[in-house]
Length: 65
Image (spheres, rainbow, N blue to C red):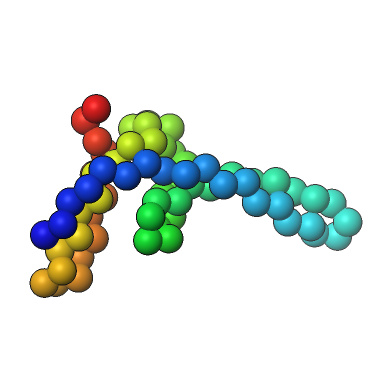
């Protein structure tokens, strides 16, 4: 099992609908994993990423520090 500490990256997207431009923000982790904005607001930007190569399971946990 591989384990490492990662930081969520904030991205801003823009979308044009019927002449109006809307902006939205979202957060990603390495491996192109999207993480809900509410989790970042609640726990912060640092997370522990655990990759179990035998089963192919990825586990994301908030980092304590």
